[in-house]
Image (cartoon, rainbow, N blue to C red; front, side, top):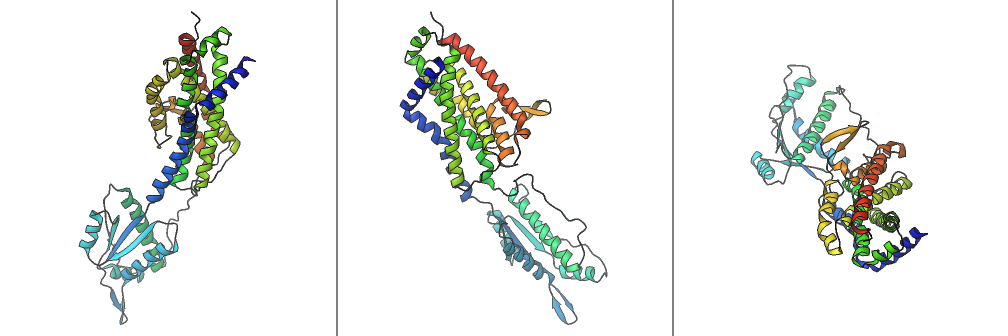
Length: 388
C-alpha cells in the first residue's frame, strides 16, 4: 500500500532529522523541570505578625491577659498543622510591624487592643457586652495579606468560641472536587505541559512535510500517483508516534518530580492522540504557505507561540466566552485545539472524571481536526501537489 510506503519513508526521514526530533520530544520535559524548580524555590509562605497591647485584668487577685493566650493559641495552630504555610511572630512595637510590612517581610499585622481581656471577661460573665475591635493591617492588594487575614480571623474565632464556651453558629465543611484538595501547584501545571509537548510537533510535522517539497522528492511522489491525502496520512502517522513519545517522556519526568497519575491512562493517551492529529493538521496549513525549512522556522514561530502561551499550555489563561454550543463555552482560545485538550486532561487528572465527562472536549477536538485537515489538504494540494 502507498500509505505504508510513505510511513516507512517518513520514519526514516524523521530519524535522519535527529536534532529536530530531540528538540521536539525534550522541550516539554525541560519545561516540567524548570517549572518544578521555580515552584520549589517559591513555595507560598504567609507571615502573620501579632502585637499584643492588651493590659489584662485582675480577677480574684489573679492577673489574666487573654491577649497572651490568643498569641499562644495562634502559635499552637502554626505548630500543629504542618501542611499550612503560616508563620506567626509576636512583636513588641507597632512601628516594628509597619516596617516589616512595608519591606515585604510580613504579610499581615494583627493588633490586639488594650481592653481585649476586659471585653472577654464581660462576655464570659454576661456583664456589659462590648464589641471587641481588633485591627488588621496590611496591603489589601496583596494576595498574601488576604490569605493571612483569613487564617487570623479563623484563629481568632476559634479562640473566642473556646474561651466563651460557645458553639460556633456556623461550621464550614469543605469538600474538595475530585482530587483538587490533594494536589499542589506543580500538579496544576502538568496537564498543560503534557499538551505543550504535543504543540512542539508543529515544527517537527511542518518540516517533515516541507522537506518533501524542498528536496524535490515530492515530484517522484506525484509521478507515482500518491495523493495529498496518502502523503499527509503517512507523515501524520509518524508524527503521532513522535507526539505520544513526547507525552510519555514528559509524564515520566513529571512523575519523577512528584506528580501522581490519577484517572485512566487510556484516556490520557486518547487525548494525546487527538491533540497530536490536530497539531499535525494545523501544520499542514503552515506547510502549504511555505516552501523551505527556513521559511517554516520564521513563519511557524508565530502560531507556535500563540498555541503555547494563549491556549493555557505554558500558563493558565481564561478567555471571555464568545458563544456556547450546547452549553459548552467557546472563547477566542477555543479555536486552538490545545485549549480543549488541556481542559479535558485537567478533568481526568485532577478532577478524576471519566470519558463521559470529557465528551464535549473530544467532540470539539474532532471538529477542529476536520477543519484544520480539510483546509491544510486543500491548500497543500493546490500549492505543492499540482503536476504542471
